[in-house]
Length: 82
View (tube, rainbow, N blue to C red):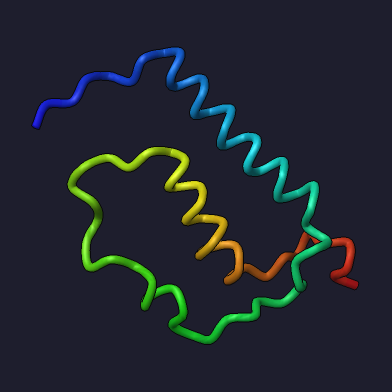
């Protein structure tokens, strides 16, 4: 498999998507419970045995982060923390 460098405009588009993901998280952080609501080992059960051999679209990666990573976070930045 040969890969080519990421097109500068595609890199910009994907970078903007990551920034939008972070901004949306902070914009709606109060909707999440402050403390993590998952059991110990929760994420390990959701991870594949190995990293993918082929690249995944940034949309898939960000959706995975939203669906699997964010629920396991303690949201220290939440205005509901105290």
